[in-house]
View 1 (spheres, rainbow, N blue to C red):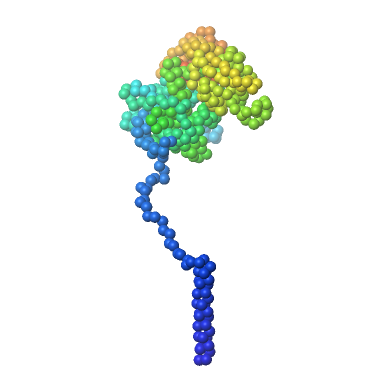
View 2 (cartoon, rainbow, N blue to C red):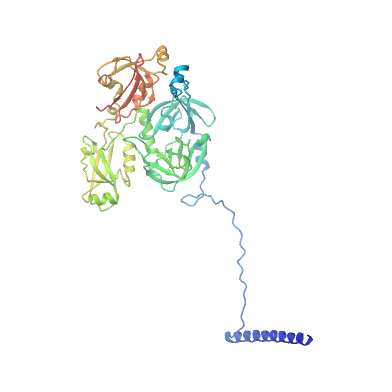
Length: 497
């Protein structure tokens, strides 16, 4: 055993000695090959002074300067109000579903007492004497409108006018020295520009969010009207239910849009918010203030956006502008010489990139205004001046506001309390006398009580007049009512018949 251990030790020492000699020989060979000793260097990063930390969410302007949202936010938040609406919910007459039970115990009206519904949205003060702009869908059908200011003071508002084609409404409170916002020019907005959305989402008052202009002239097909004007500003500033009617402002605190809608599967913000541009809002509220209704200017064309299919169908070489597919008789376009097959490329110096651009440019104009158009006709550029008209082909904007009440041919009186109680109605406007007019043509008799116009409740003669001021003549009016004997009736009147 001792001999075995000695042999093992000798073997290990021999292997170790061989390894050491091999290493020395290899090192000498490398040194000889290079002609010099190998120089080993240790490289270290220079020690530098650390920079101050910055937030990952820091925003910078186009000039590279940090963006300050505070001034615009503080200026805007006092001018955005909380609009609370009340809607009358009519009770439904219903039985138990068992005719024998109803016969034996008597018919029961289970929902006799109407329960009011409530709404919560936003509005923007645009004048020191109490004018406030909001969305039409915010106040449409409301029986009561209350406005709460940033200082928590609440006032009752009345509707001055509303326009469903732009989804804009104008309301007013009895107040002075209010902090009004100044209109900015939405035409000057640039993609990527910072904007703030201010409103009252989910009843959270005075909420400010920031984002950029994601797109312009968006048509999202949300307004249900023949003459709808959709040319929305798209933003990624957070907009949620309750923000409708609130302000979209630039960093100078100027009003450049009224927040209106979101694109969402969940019903809450998912990255896409839309606002009516200030160019349309300003024109609409000015009309409502001056005329009580919007002066609708029409170009009188039917058009198609040019895509691959349209270009192939009509032999169009470039995918620019909109294709004129039709020209209305007695229209501004017809008078100016616009023809089917023309391609509209430019309006008042603004490139036509979509149908929304056409809607916006025409929508912010009045009857009698001039528009400079650039057309492509058979490959040649053509400049045309168009004088816009009303649907009836009139140039004078005052003529567009024809007296609808006169055309209906009736005088009215308020419904007495006794008649209201007898018929179970909340109010109405009763026809006192009929003359030649559209009501008589439709077979309506004297004594008929108008209780609603286009599904909006009529409480008084003044209320009827206010509703008729804002009726869309292109769609006519639906009149619903009741006679003193309890007989109900309705009629649809086309005002252009």
